[in-house]
Image (cartoon, rainbow, N blue to C red; front, side, top):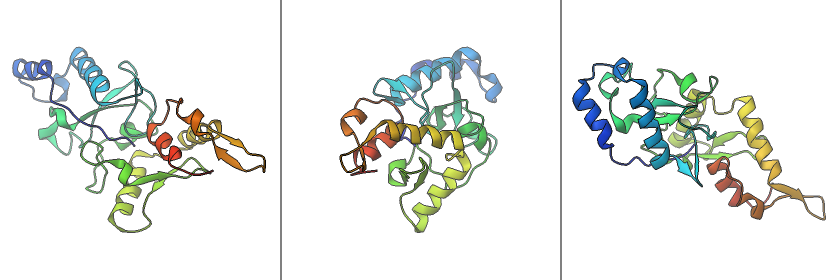
Length: 202
């Protein structure tokens, strides 16, 4: 998961809200949704020149993405038009916002408010995202978030595992080690990449 560093609500959205007298999410048209996604992707979700879903870290773009209400609008109706509650997520139907739907839990790691890096690490052998701690509230929050977003979905773990294998080689003793020079030039899974760059071996 990636931290989303929200910036100021854009003026075009303030103007849209002022003119539209919004009552619910249905009052948001295709044009304003695309403008919002473009703004968020360019200013808040861009790493190494690429746009990512903050939950699963898949690459996304304006067309292949959706606006995610981190705190679900069904449970937090007053936040349906709050910019600070928006991020741009992927369209994958087995993970992220699509599977989270309107579920909420106070232990969910909101990447707008909390830095996920403090809660997660990765299994190099399986490609799974796992809790950084073995007990306590940070462990519980990590487990709850992984479950709500289905972040260890099989295909997603396979993609992470493939990324790890592409970034490693066997040394003279047959030991698998990470090639950190290669890693520096791969622009996928930013938090996994950072984790691997700080790992001694596979």
